[in-house]
Length: 183
Image (cartoon, rainbow, N blue to C red; front, top):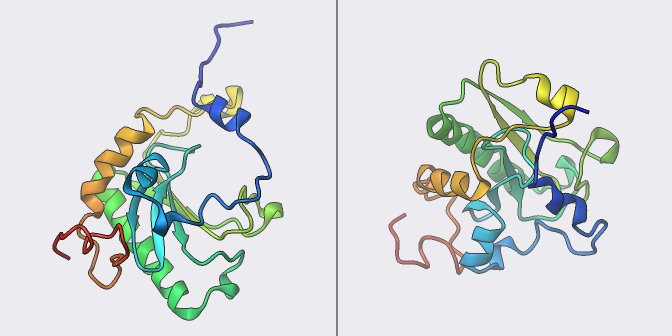
């Protein structure tokens, strides 16, 4: 056997309880600022939020999640649908500026048969891409190389999401308005 390839961050996923009753996406609007930080939330809006994927395919892999706990696009009410995709659009712009990525994969896995790990709560993936970022590691070793700690990536992205349009910004207990910040 050759040299081992280490991916110690994966142990959290391996050991984490599976099939838990509580949805990992629900409760974000009511979460404390520290809990949002711990859960890698980058920005919250009135109807959706942006967070880093804890088990990313690439550095900066974002999830855009509606607050509504629904499994399909047709279950979203029109206002939630519009807000979700406005935030997807805003997030692609900000991610490109923050990480200088040259491309992105944007997608939704609807249902477990389509690859959704959390099928009961719709979410959109945005995966930044660079030329040559796909190499032999995922193919041969089932290992993805993520060059920056998730917490450091979150901290870097915060400034790029700080000026979301006022029409999207969360007015809840942890939104910018509640902290006395300008919209």
